[in-house]
Amino acid sequence: MRGRSATAASVVYRRLVAASALVRLGWLFGALYFLQGLVEPGDGLVAQPTRAMLEESGRGAGAIGDAMLIASLPWAIKPLFGLISDAFPLAGSRRRSYLALSGAVAAAALALLAFAPVEVGGWLFVGCLTAATAAIAFADVAVDAHMVEVAQPLGLTGPIQAIQWGAIYVAAALAGWAGGAICEAKAYHLSFGAAALGAAATLALALAGVREAPVTTRAGPAGVRAALAELAAALREPRLRSTAIFLVLWSFSPGYGAVLDFHTTRTLGLGEGAYGDATAIHALACAGGCALYWAISRRTPMIALLHAAIGLGAASALVYAAIEGPRSLLWTSALGGATYMVGSLALLDLAARACPPRLAGTLFALLMALQNLSLSVATWLGGHAYEVMVGPLGGRWAYAALALAGAVASAGCWLLLPAVRRSA
Image 1 (tube, helix red, strand yellow):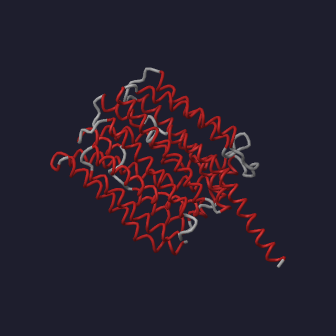
Image 2 (tube, one colour):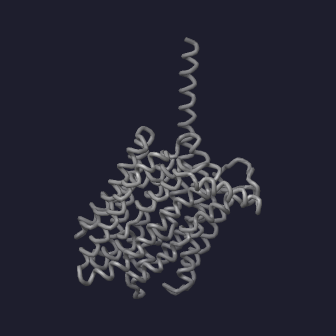
Image 3 (spheres, helix red, strand yellow):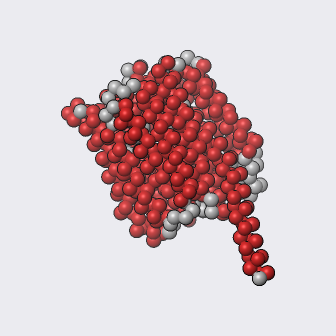
């Protein structure tokens, strides 16, 4: 009896420790992701005002896609940021110091756009957006690496990521509502000033809230050689390769982002305010999807979650083709957000489980960079394809073709499931 009592007490103790860790880490990572959701130029508070400014300066869907592609390129070099963080500790830290520095750089770039006379669409305008994106991408690498390091040993990667992404989409809802209002008032520079304050808050939170163990990784060339050797060994693992291909194919959605914005506000003529409201509803629906994934992630087999992710990814790509007016814009945004988020979190959970903690900065960043690059290239191709098809097909059918292409790409992931199952 004593043995059973001791075992039961041990189980209760472990559960209490895990619950305490979930609360403590959830608040930290949730706050960091909330700030990222406000500040990130591609999807945050400045995203819709930036596109509106470019549209008012006479740029078409293709030119806007070009500018947004350039500004989003730092997300594609996240593995380099991860390698720097893994191999070159800064002030005795691999995560905290880089997170603080990233917040400072983003705050400076966004403040320049807010308060300096910068030509819209010019090289300095795009350069500041790119610098802010690079800083946020580096901060994202540091946060994700720290998450893998502390959450993977506790088996909490799924719940923590659900909290992170729930927070980022609450921020996106706020950013969407505020961005639409700012565009209606044409007070574009207000969004850049508010985003600069959010970046400064990231700096403060990094210094006050992030704690990590003393660095044991060798710095300098020796550290790089050691990290590259471990990276080469990790990249030979079948699980990591199949996960990477899965992420790239699932994320190829040419009807997302700037293309959807242009189609809704310009072709359908629904207005910036309506699109901002829809963005907010989409973000709230994504937050709801995060809550659902948080509830099911620890009790559902990974393979079942991936089956659901594929079907939901295809559905989230198709649903936006049903937009006709203000009402359909709102319900498609809600449905598309919820389905997309549950599927996306399953893929992020798979990626976090596939990464060895010793190279969390580099490998998780590599997987996320491939996913972001796939989406960015798809959006760029979608913008140019839309311009070509909108004449002969009309706006609705041109967009429907892009939505179908995204759904087919997501459905193609079913062909990869046997490889993922074997490697897992």
